[in-house]
Length: 206
Image 1 (spheres, one colour):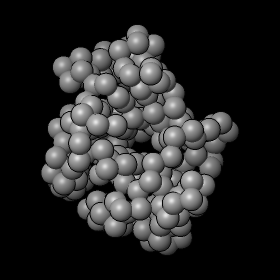
Image 2 (cartoon, rainbow, N blue to C red):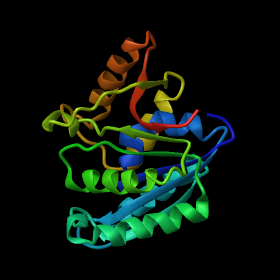
Image 3 (cartoon, helix red, strand yellow):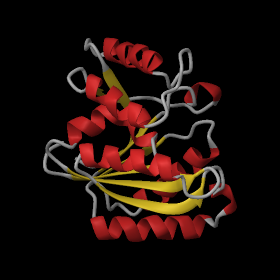
Image 4 (cartoon, rainbow, N blue to C red):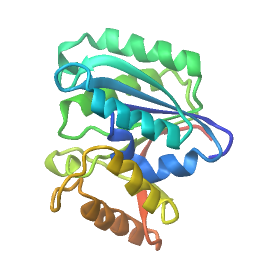
């Protein structure tokens, strides 16, 4: 992907690095990036997490839009309102490509995935690709079928740096740096690379 406008649509500040941090770093070298987060914190605005989010934004030279929903409250909002809000953001940025959540066990991830699905039916995007957050997909019957693998061997060390801007989870949590390393090594082995991230192709126009 070169010279594209790429929107990364997530539920929470940090999903962008846990879901696709290495790919984000790779794409940021030759594309324009917008990161959209629907939620701003668990109980109101989370200043510390926002500061970490801004550090990530600066490292990948991206634009961002942060909505004002609390974590785990998206299911209380009108789906139409959420869809229209994202639609207005994306109309302004006019992305070629959208990355977002697959439908895992986190209700916020499912809702954001559904909202992107609605907008993708309008045929405005060249591609829509979905990722998982380690530790979430394993607890759902979501039939996630990765069909796109991106080599992040060169970006992996910097991915860990992005993750450490946020809370550092302790091993054996699936979001701990050690488990992330094992996870990305396993995905990499599928394509004979040291480390990789995988995505499900939801929509692709060639």
